[in-house]
Image (cartoon, rainbow, N blue to C red; front, side):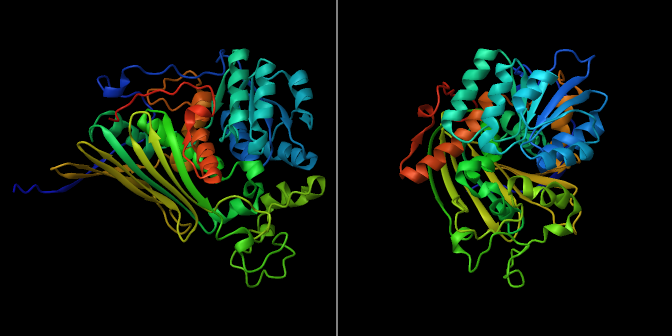
Length: 457
């Protein structure tokens, strides 16, 4: 028997958004970049609906502070008038405020509407904007069920306008490098993927404090959170999901808790509850939520053990892709640490990564990818962080949206309604499978024609 050594080597990959060098395998057939603004010489007029944390920070203040020379906020909209007033001050803008979305569209006539409302309402604002002849940038997930998804697809086709879904994970240098490795055929034809995501007892628990704990509002974490992960799989594998089978249960949070209350502040169990969260320690959260509870009754520090929580806190999903790739995916929401493990198995080798999120006291400047060839050596590829949230993805995404919407997109990172649909349809199919106990055909959910492409067998 011939013995092969497995020497380790290290190389640096500089995180840049520049176009790949000529001759790279996947430059053939670059998709046309999605563009929402046709006149770069003029400021993009933006209307924002949804002034929660995501809207007021990432797509509000951060956009205003960094891209003020390229954009102008012409209207802010939210059902909570208190959050609206705070949002205007927080963003540092001087534009009209609206609790009526239709009125904002009619009076302000924006170029683009940014949708950062509760997931189950995304479709309302996306469709109204499209029908008014306005392009849309929407937070993920695009929506929460197959009927709303189909309605968005129909509205976009009829309007001739475009929707971009903000999949910031695609833009992080680490995930972009995996895309490049797979497209360059380094491990041959991809045959299967192992993908396991861990949310810790801080981040994971926070979904159960909020409206995300209700299936009717967030579609379960298989839609709200896993849409990120399923989109990455679809993007990496360059194929459509064909069939999904899943298990899921609520066994840790919700009614499983040893005690419960309405929310943390008045709770009599705060001294013995590991999940007690003092929202008053954050001035921003107080200004945004606590001071405005009387308008809509929303308690941002809800008890993670509320009896009416009805989403899953552990999930296991099997996905078969049109190109034959098989995926094993899981999501755990009460892990002692945060991060994910992923491995791609191919006919010529294996690509794997263990990305553990850094703790507040740690400084993490790079991630690693391990590439092992069959009968060959192992190579350790070091990826510096690009800076900013979501592993450097947030800044690069916003540069594409607001700084230079017409920039080249060699990695196909800009995502439209088809991408948004295919990611949520995996989660929706998984949820339907859990509820029915049967495998679900993705083609049965909408009228999207599934495609068999990519490097799978």
